[in-house]
Image (tube, rainbow, N blue to C red; front, side, top):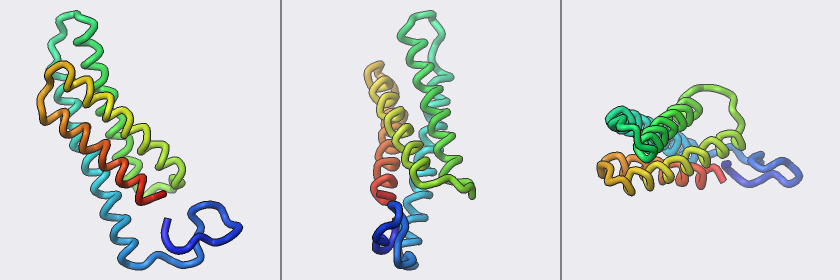
Length: 137
């Protein structure tokens, strides 16, 4: 993640400790991603609650997409915010899952003529996940 890779060690193990600037950048990126996840979860939960249960399969699919996106974003935010000992590979898997779900949800909201706010929040979260994955890799 930081510094020069140590030869013969697993990926992520470095020979030099991170600089203060690298550490600040990492924490800022992590916080920005968690913040985007929180906003996306809020918007998707609200959007799902506003879907009129008229019994159509399309409305139910849209509601479920919103709920799923809210749950995945919330879980990703918890992983990024808590002081747990989750390894980098697990964080990357969580971020990729969140990114994929957010893009699916944005597409579903856009296709049904959903609010620009919900589409934008989903896309912003997907972009934040991608950006943070890039900083880890």
